Length: 278
Image (cartoon, rainbow, N blue to C red; front, top):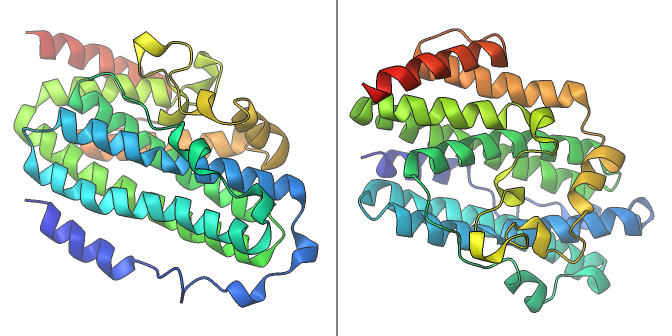
């Protein structure tokens, strides 16, 4: 089982909201209304770990080890939402999310193949690590800069935990798992082909609710993510290359291959899809 060791390692790295956030360093002159509003939207988006956890538990009833790990992931992701809400409650209470705004992002996700979903969320953690690093750089107020640094480190650790489950999946399912991971890796490493930033929170997940079946579509401002990335934290091509590079490096290690480019991964995806179908 992976859960016991993951619990120990993540427990050692866990930060305390009361003791590890330097609340006393807050400087009101360095927080704009524009910046505070983005904190609100990220707090609501992180709340969507709730329906994601419900999805994971439903679709992984066969896997008690992974389901137990969800207790850690869910706790830490909800704490991300909570620490941002606490920041707003203390320093910009008019922008603190309402319970109705939080509940709006709790909706049912359609069932999906577990391996594809696992890879999707691994890539989501890789991307969110980089988004939060940029957010920490963009913000000028020291407390929220520190908070985003804490969140970024958490997301990186979560990605590492998902990777362990991906390695185990390959040991158990071989090419079936490789094919699923390569397919989703191609999608998540090629955002320009999709025309939007690729993250679980802005992908369609409930056909019956389309087009209002993404987490982002249920926010008070559904257009905020692109504006945050393009105009505020300036997540440019160089930042995007770091995301793609992270996905390719991890898949290279996972598959014992060398992927320098997305095209390399695509060629592997095609070959493994044929092998998996045999």
